[in-house]
Image (cartoon, rainbow, N blue to C red; front, side):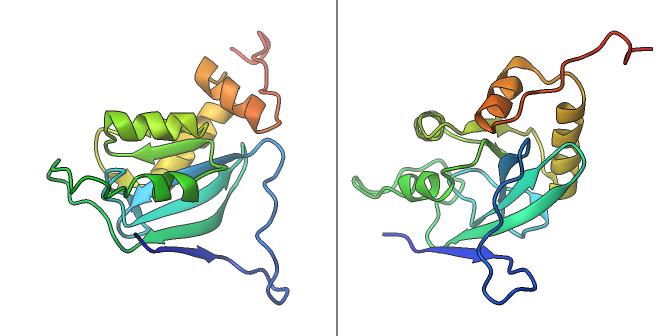
Length: 165
């Protein structure tokens, strides 16, 4: 059984609850080993940085940390040693998951939790991931992102012919 720790930011009010997601913001999880870079496979990620990302700003919501993770060898552990389900459960409520790699069974669990996994081909800073997500939100989002926006209770901005020039 793996141990899960949630580290949330507290506002200037004493023990304030985690802020509600702003309308139109996507809740994004980023697989990380160091809280600075997207640099982990889903199964081997020690942490997930969770952000609310809108067209104009992003906010760190929480960091979810795991004590017991896979190595990146691709070897499966003993039967019944499920380390994926606790990660998926911890990320419920997120719309997007960015990671370097994710196996088929893990991806199926993530998708069934209504989280869209996105594999990134090489490590990059978390800031780069967030900026790229904002750019997708500002421009005409692809169909899969429009679907995520609909789930986030925000109608996507429709492209206007006047905007192009």
